[in-house]
Length: 166
Image (cartoon, rainbow, N blue to C red):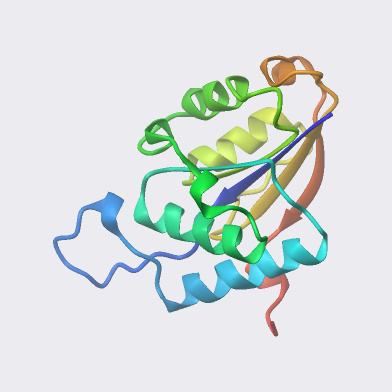
């Protein structure tokens, strides 16, 4: 059994002019939402075997906040260049190449690709992932490389607007 959490990076700050897209940081709401959603996951006692992030500052920052709040070793976050300015194929290739030692993995990335990836892995997910949105997918695939051959199950979908008072 394999579990995959696809997480769209938190809200980014557009106020800095002439900043390259990859260098855009989180805004105040983004920091708040990343803490909020990671604490919600912590209450569910979820601990990933591996966290992977796009190299964009906003994705890495979101991954770092989740890692810290889930007590995941920050030095073990894997940065994958192929998850930035990418395609669904790049995300799928990343998933298919995961080590079999990892049963649960979190991937932090960007829309619309992360939504398209979630849609391609499960027939029951047809939403758009909002910023700091989390999609959990469980597969009965014995290996990551066979995850596309299985009927994968949507086990979790949550995002900050579901928790307006937190």
